[in-house]
Length: 324
Image (cartoon, rainbow, N blue to C red; front, side):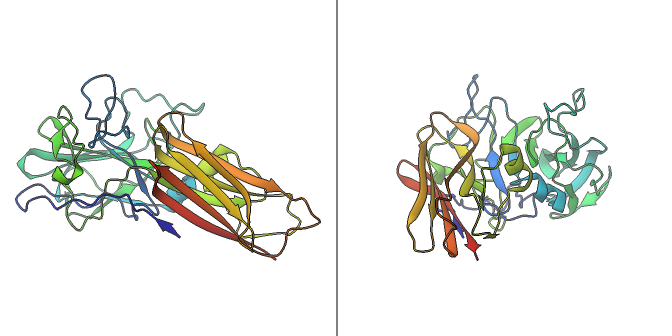
């Protein structure tokens, strides 16, 4: 169970404007997430379209990420955000996280496997970091909005599985949430925004949230979290420990990451409230308790994960495991 109360839904763009549907076949806030946005700060700092820190210096697009590598392997389609003509494609680059020992030399191919589509009135969309061998279109193809282009991957300059979408008009990079060029000023007042996303796209601005959560009989490593988001829905009463973990994204300084583990009677057996010392793109936290008796009491144990900003819940997740 989850809530994502802080997502911001905008009015649709005018009918005469360039409009886009979601470029990913997944449910935002549930099975995929927007982690980073176009950088609208003209200096060395970074600002997302609404003046928050969810970007990095010079970032030219929107990142639709998956929670883990297992989701990437299952396959999540990348689709054309608007009708147009395929102008270029690239395939064959391996799905290896940038900066790891096996990562290839990019030689300027930071986009990895990708597709470029041109649209009417000088618009274009570029789709990066697609999975090797998944490109489903070729140069010159006419595609409708929603046509499958490939699958989300890990190719190019990326350290997590995601689609990087860049929108351009002529030579200008345009942020799709406020329909303004990169060299514009961010808008703190979201109500003034007129996005390129269609009313039916389901794309909303996400100010941060919970990527994944689980309960285990041990403390997981971060590489395991990135790989599979591990969770055991049923545990042995003789398990050495019970641990609830949460993987967060879009975290701001002074945010509180709250993790609570309760027993079948509702009593809290482990809890942490961690205040973030600085902004972070992602953050992993865990809390648990070792078994103190002969065995854990049978029943349902519940993990509650909350992300709070200014005392308000930005996102929360709830997960259960049974001890039989």
